[in-house]
Length: 255
Image (tube, rainbow, N blue to C red; front, side, top):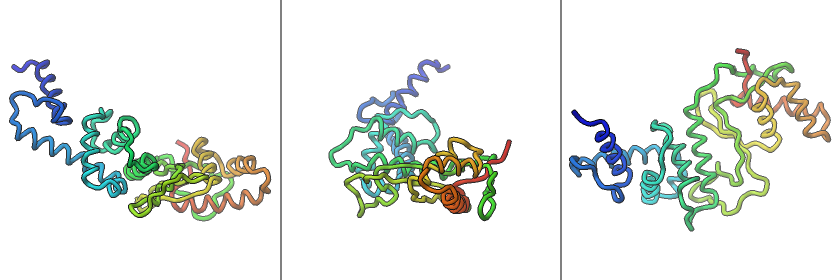
């Protein structure tokens, strides 16, 4: 009968060697060829998830650098989740917390990685059963609103949605960049660049799910006292129609 303590110790040694074959000794009794095959299998699975979740970062780094980063990730990072679907978030945590900045790192690296992770996360998140699509046209004054669970309102210093190998900005923008990453009615992940007012509007809705169109207009009017209430309401109606059509803002249903 195998002692449970010895078995657990062997499993820990096995996992440590798989993560760091150069720094951790191989467990006794396992053929080195088999260890190498398993190590490559685990490495390729993790690398595949990173490539899928961070396609622009992959293009900027290239295969060789990406492989080095994945190897460092396996050595340095201790994942909080056992699920492969969470590897993207774990890799983002590694970039923020463990990875040492390098001289050739672009200033936008972490923001770009966060943006790409958000796109990946939105693709797999589940919509709320308490939300339904806004009716076509201008919503009524008492319509309770909510930001869709499949939408994320974001602010960055760099235009991360435009970054590619031939466009790598060196300086942050003065005003910042406001974006919504969302899943549309066809379940495609999209982004929408918005202004500061729309971002604040979405913040109001996010912080007060069920807020009515009238209440939202009141908050926006208080935010912009120099603008006539009728003009604020007209602009709000136009914005809500667009956000509703995109599936970013929905009607909240009482449970």
